[in-house]
Length: 349
Ligand code: MG
Image 1 (cartoon, rainbow, N blue to C red):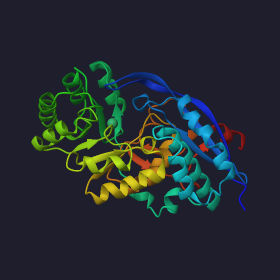
Image 2: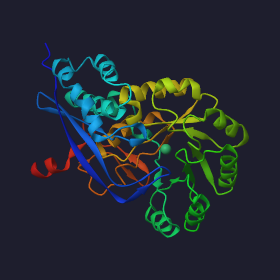
Image 3: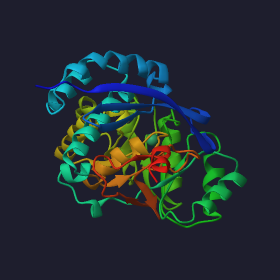
Image 4: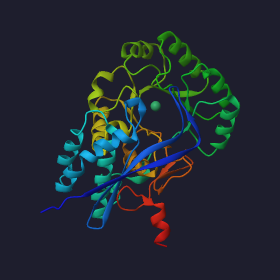
């Protein structure tokens, strides 16, 4: 009965407002892949934000996306669990590409039904958590400037994990007293050093520590968690649902990202699992356009913490969709994930 979906894709370049530096690297722009799934004049949008940390590039994402062309051509789009499992089987690693396909599929399905994605999942858009705004690693002068510029955001995520940690926090604290969450991006590879850093950070009004140690140093992270009185969250230590059981007792919570999970279906499985294990849930992002951010924002009413600022740190987002207003995640009432292409919007006026 079904004639399937037409799959196409393009690489987009997203330029950062400021050079983006974290413990492991520094970038000025990002190349992501936009996926379109079309049928019956309905276009579903998806996005891959490949991350070199996980062995991904725009090109490696496209290799996986191309493998899915014939599968989508022959599929019945309404059998989305079946398609979801087929997407998962395309490759065991390249999760950003899989996320693009899964997001586009759900955008197409919910647009076809005329429903916003959050309504389809039975969620209340007024229950979105407040998102942090991230401050990348920089010189004290630049940190002060960036923190002042982020004045309208009530919660900041500060990137640490280099030799300048104390200098950065002093710079932040010289201009604001708002609550801080810390992301060390695996930057502290010695447990005693991590313990000292965290104990000092607690005195600086920090409320949460994300991925203090390298992803596979779970014994050391367990040692650390036994000795500090602050929630510790996993990010690089958790990609998909199968990673969660081994983290129970080691971390208080997990940072779920659509790009690591491989899409919305796996992210939902992760949310149910984390809740079952009594772990807190943060929903995070990579550097992404409004396509991937909006997809994540649609499921954010299910989580405790959010870090969905990826589209706020780029200067040339080709899409409009969910965004942050004083840290509040704002979802619109458009069907699907709620995005419009900027050029399309202009020509239709
Ligand atoms: Mg992180």
